[in-house]
Image (cartoon, rainbow, N blue to C red):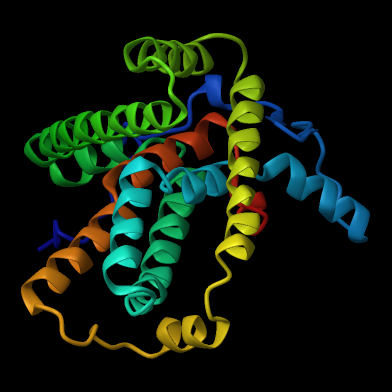
Amino acid sequence: MTDLTTTPPTSAQRVAVLDEAHLGDIRGALGTIKLDDTAPRKGLSAKLKTLLAIVGPGLIVMVGDNDAGAFDTYGQAGQNYGTSLLWTLLLLVPVLYVNQEMVLRLGAVTGVGHARLILERFGKFWGAFSVIDLFLLNALTIVTEFIGVTLAVGYLGLPKTLSVLVAAAVVIAAATTGSFRRFERISVFLCVGSLLLIPIYFVIHPGTGTMVHDFVVPGMPKDSKLSDVMLLIISIVGTTVAPWQLFFQQSYVIDKRITPRFMKYE
């Protein structure tokens, strides 16, 4: 008797296949790789050019999660407990790495998005559940982003309503007009803006020894209420690992036409 649980799907059963729209040159923000470019990457210069053309999806997802909600949560943790909860971020590093590598492999090999694979593998219920869940969480995330905009412009003394409208218009225009390359260039430029945290670090000049210790040695803040600390830790985890990362990066890998050949660079 044939074991139906282990029988691979036939080509006629498969729906998840790479379509023609996602075949062609890789046109990244910082370079291009032609479809017929099959030459081996020898030498530092060739490898660097390939890296610059491929870089994008993983970087944007990594930096993109440092949004208003994340800054608010991390700032709250620092304000209340100093650097004593830095160890939570160290524990999340392997989780984020596994998530990003997983969707990279899924996207590069199958050529279809995360929701499509869930639908085909687990059926309509879980496919619909994943998309509805993603929609609701993204809606809440967008709300926190615009709250962040109002707080920032309020600090600068600018009109809040007008600033929110301008911010929304810029985001919509960046995502819906122009080319894929232009969108990626804007996104990479915004990622570079995160480097402003470096001078802020030197302005605040926290104790380096204490930071290193709290980063690698888990511990609870002294004289603190356990329930408050645990709630903040849950918030840190929730704002660091989000569903949108999986769906967005896998789709991004496909839209950029990254194939298994370039997975190591990505």
